[in-house]
Length: 246
Image 1 (cartoon, rainbow, N blue to C red):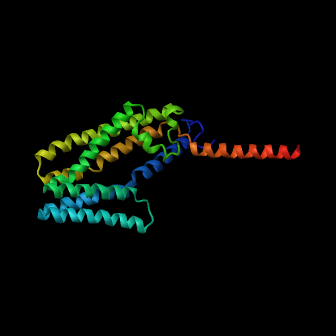
Image 2 (cartoon, rainbow, N blue to C red; image 1 turned 90 degrees about the horizontal axis):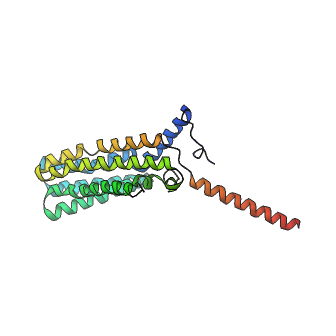
């Protein structure tokens, strides 16, 4: 058994600190940390800033797409993970295509809004189905895969709470943005969207950390598989020795 498999003594401050540290590291890896947030905000911020100044849709769109590509290149040069930067490129590219097709700068934000709504529904529906989405996202990061579904009910409950939090927070964000999409002008809407980019995300991540830090530790299924493989090799070696002795 690894240290993650041992029962947690909730009276031990040291074990609680270890659990929090493991959870923080996993959340940082899954959601990209500060750098991931910056890469999420910068393209949209550049778009609305340029459009506010000169009302030029093409220049704003090209600038947003260019900076998102630069962020990917920087990660490639630094040999860092590019999944968050790539997701930003795709999001910006879809926004640029929508805005160019309709000629309405506000449509630059529409794909991201639809994605947010779809993600909110996914969190809620998967939780109702007994397979909370946040558990599917974080399970591999914690090296527990889907073991929490059947072998760790306390952890499954924490994932369900976290998924409800993500779903409801994102729905609340959509409840603000979609009416503004119709009522506000492009500049006003763009700045409101930028203002709502980080706070809801940080709230959802914080609640996820709270729920998981108090949950039972993850079961490291990779360590279990390695231990089982090692034990099987030892049994094979023992049988081979017995055959030679015979």
